[in-house]
Image (cartoon, rainbow, N blue to C red; front, side, top):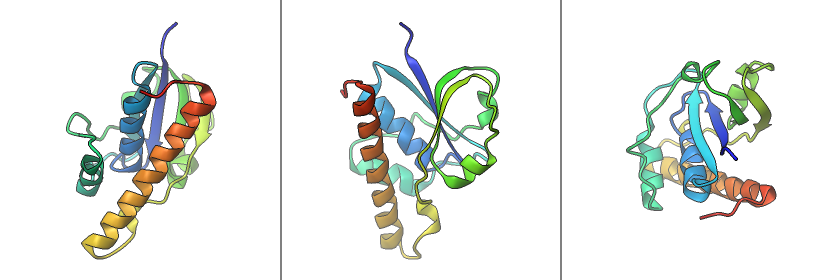
Length: 145
């Protein structure tokens, strides 16, 4: 049986969707293929890289990608939007998608002025995403590595 493919979609593909992709790879890499993209891709936020490194996940192999790289070119078992803005912008009929889920997380880049406030929010969102990925895999009966 072919692995399920999951596409995490966000606005910029700089934080939440990158974290989700990395966590899904970490916990279900043998069973699920993880991808991420954005409607307006940019550069992975340095705080994203920093808070993921703190827990031993290196994002150096990942980069911000446009949803156009995948639209009509790949099929996905799941499309999971990780922010409300992406959910609102996402077409209701998305070609090549079997299931669509919405897991809205706060934008960590939109919170805090000081470095410590930003780091705290990025860590909070990182931990929420990790917990949600683990719960979802448990619900699906997929063993976590």
